[in-house]
Amino acid sequence: MSLTIGQVAKRSNVNLETVRYYERLGLIKEPPRTEAGYRMFPADVVDKIKFIKRAQELGFTLSEIKKLIRISENEEHFTAHEVHQFAKQKLDDLEAKIRDLEKMKSVLQDLSERCSGKGPICDCPIIQSLSQEGES
Image 1 (tube, helix red, strand yellow):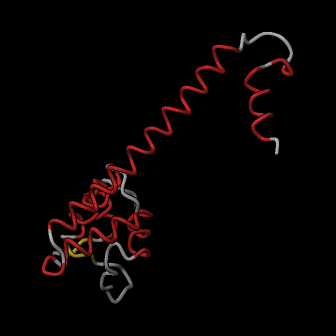
Image 2 (spheres, helix red, strand yellow; image 1 turned 180 degrees about the vertical axis):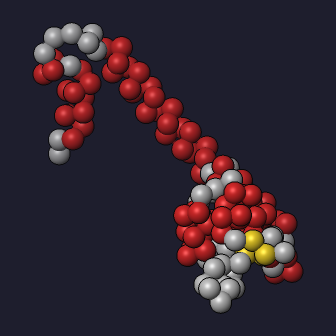
């Protein structure tokens, strides 16, 4: 069964441009075209797009997802251990980002508490802090 790009987008719950973008990046294969030039995708492309979206929700970049797709399509060349290590590295990256976000939250929270919201801008601790941080 072949699907038009519109059918693929609807079944995958993405827009047409997303399907085109994934095709340009090589995340999904360029489908054959009809004589009129319409793309006719195989039905399994919907599952692949859903895979891509789930991986994005877990924080994987499109480049990392491309690697995951290669791994999933070439099982004989990769081991479960390699997939585990790949996921573990992503988890480590996410934990580092969480730590960075917590630091940013703490600083911003402190600045917000120090700012009364009154008076001239030049006395605002938020603006003062941002100005000082930007100086060389």
